[in-house]
Amino acid sequence: MYKAILVGANFQNNNLIDYYMEELQNLAEACDIEVLYSITQAIDKITPNLYIGSGKVKEIKGFANNLDADLVIFNNELSGSQIRNLEEAIGTRVIDRTLLILDIFASRAKTKEAMLQVEIAQLEYMLPRLAGLTPSLNRQQGGIGSKGPGEKKIELDRRKIETDRSKLKNELEEIVKARKVQRKNRIKSKIKRVAVVGYTNAGKSTLVNALIDFTNKDIDKKVYTKNMLFATLETSTRHIVLDSNKEFLITDTVGFVSNLPHHLVESFKSTLEEIGEADLLLHVVDSSHEFHEKQIEITRNTLLEIGVHDVPMIYIYNKADLLHKPIYPSHNPHIVLSLKDEIDVALLLQKIEAELYKEDFIASLLIPFTEGDLVSYFNENTKVINQEYTNDGTLVTLELSPILVSKYSKYIVKK
Image (cartoon, rainbow, N blue to C red; front, side):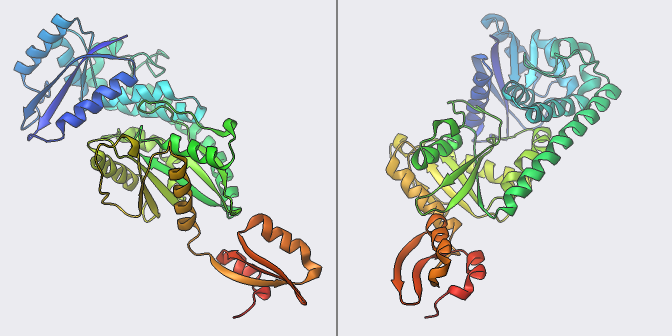
């Protein structure tokens, strides 16, 4: 296990520096790194060769020697020459926040698509740093122990990286094409689609599992959950059927974090396209976190960065069971709940149904006795409110979507 010192440059006394450093520690721990000490420096501008002041670098060297640290992690993105100069000055390995996140993603990637996405992002990260990192590339290895370009003994020159990047992008494009065909088939089915978004470790996968538990109790359908940042990178889609016979597909997506590396966002855009094509977004918020409003802002900004606009959203203020005092959400529509509480989950499902099917309306249809199969269809696929038999056929009062209204308009009884 690596033992690390964390370093953060605080520009113009940013009052969120403690939050960012806490997040960096969580990221380090998610990568099985023991954090020995955390240090910050207030700066007005970047020092070109070391990023921070030379005096602070000497201080960091002292801590590294005294605490026997073998890694220094900067919360700020460093250039190749800055990493090289810092390593020479401190006498130990130096990485930045971006490389740490890339390494976490590399260790979590399980599918071929995720592996390709992460490896492309790693190459994009290394490309502009080649000149500065040349003397220390043997130490960098492209990561801090997980799968990546370094482990594959890649000759880290520009031409080789560009060739490999092009090859990986072509492989990824073939996978993306196949997934787009699957997505088109889902769209053709007209079934509603819901995407779960939010800050990493806010409870997105827990939400999906809570809905599965409540609606069909199928443990085989559950998605992976663990109390850690970026527990999974896989985009999982599940089918939810409500008591009203209405249904929707729910997709669990990768979580967001502040300053998510641009290369990583670009590489994962194909996966995140699911979000932009959803009928409804469920924005899961850890309401117990001191800076949950900041996390909401980060998630919203990341959605804008990947091109998600104007998709209806419900803010789900999760972990209400951990609150010590009431909160007053500033975003609507919203619901404050604990996903451990079945009553709360039932209320959430009602809210999702109301939002997804708000264009539905109640209609009465008179179905001739000769078309009894149609009555059975409505009972199996819609929410039937009342059903009675008349001299002319079966009078069914039910909720209909605009599509079904158009399709069965000849049966509607005008009032």
